[in-house]
Image (tube, rainbow, N blue to C red; front, side, top):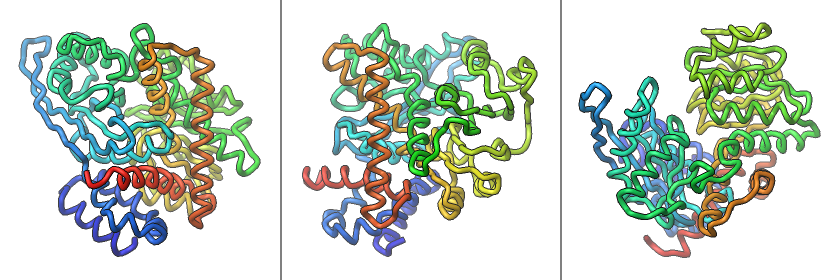
Length: 445
């Protein structure tokens, strides 16, 4: 790491003690920016990086609510509004017990570059709470969402900060939060949230967008080596919305997806995942991945070991951060993996990324590969602003155009800075340049 960048990195560690995920995200960006600082000394002169690693606003608040037994519960809510140089803050809300300020900063920092790569006029932010919706009744989830929004409403708006869903937050939770926002403000401000139900301002394709987008990205990567997903064997981790739609779309393009997982383990289906059965179990019945194996003769459940032990041509991690380790990467490389694309946010450890790059494996970082979700959220914002609705096919075509553009800009930027074929460097620099130039244009703010 270039000495000037290393000094700023030390300041980040000192000012944000214990926030290891945030440090990891900063390190991943800083490791690629040396050539940019050398070519553009004005970024150093204007203190761009020192400003960029400090969120514009960090909001932490108490979320009191009452469970079905009448017991008062207290959770902690967050919204990190990281950078608005390109537009209103944009990023999801996550409900999960692991949520704390460091994860919100990591996600918000990543979101700045991801949103920049989409080409849309949106800044970056992230929010959430250390609330676990698993096992909670619908009434408990509604009361929690209403309490959460009773504080957050004053910090968001279609021209200020536009949240969406994330882990633990789907259309149901967004509906509860939007309803409370509307009740408190006396405004039907559709553009204040994305990921809404289609009947009340949501966009077609938004539920599919992240999963479809990551598959579109990996298909573009494979085309650079004159291959494609048609006939490829694929491993997908997770079984949430992103994983389900990645599995579905990859198989539509001719791939055979062998795996899916949840916190209890993973399944291997040599005939290819039966997506309709998996959707039924995970979204309707809210069952476990082991239920799939019990109802599918050609599948078996594995409770120990790693999903990445399965030999495949393509790996798409869609579960959570740091799920794919250096050891997992070594196993995938030994088994002949050709491409890896991140469907989740930072699912690969630093050592895993190094292993893939050293082995010549095509590697699509999350800020590029999974940008389809936020890109389609921006399309939802456009529809809300014009009080219009677009067809599924038209919106899907816009998503595909965006993912191809992101891929091509990553390739071109990496080439321009002397790192041909390095998607990590290309994505980081392309995302950074647009934000940095906007920050310089707007002065010291």
